Length: 79
Image (cartoon, rainbow, N blue to C red; front, side, top):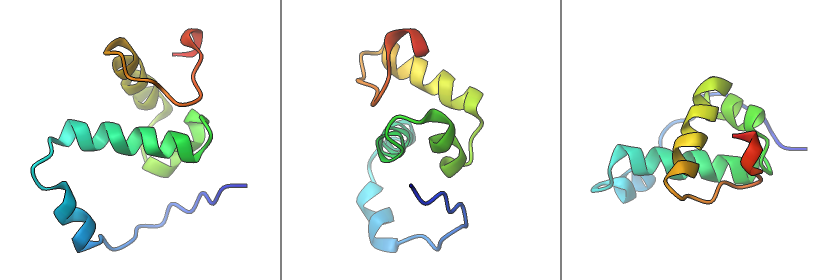
């Protein structure tokens, strides 16, 4: 079972520094996809962890799939 702890944690300054120079859309995409892998493709749990609605999650995944990004644990008809 995965930990669905949604408490806010202090940002890691070193992790934030590694993101400098990247576009926000890239960071958002990578974070969504990493969280989806963490939840073994469970979009609802990933959305809860990220603090976004399942609708936003579906819309983002549809956008990524249409641009050719491989979506973890997805079947084409699910998005």
